[in-house]
Image 1 (cartoon, rainbow, N blue to C red):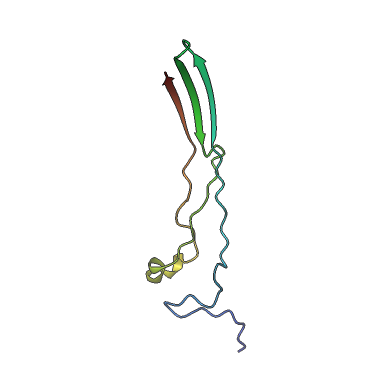
Image 2 (image 1 turned 90 degrees about the vertical axis):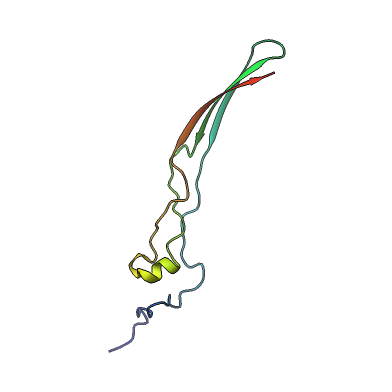
Amino acid sequence: MTNSGLAQPLVGHFGTLGRNAARINGLNNSDWVLSKTFAVTERVQVQFQAQAYNVFNHTSFALISTGARTLSSPNVFGYYDATQSEARNMQLNLRLIW
């Protein structure tokens, strides 16, 4: 039997793969703000804003699962288990400036 070099590491060991070998997607987050200022009098203004966070609803995954939790359940090692970005969020603001 020949050794192919792809043996499973011992329990509690992560093998000999180098540091930062796992590549994950970068954080892509697009935030937009549209605003319009209306003059009520010379000194008083009203500003309307529409804000949108994560406009394209791009999901960015958090780091892959490693550490103490994977020692107790090694079948989840190397899988994404959380997201790093929030879902699309929109809000409207009305501001009085005097």
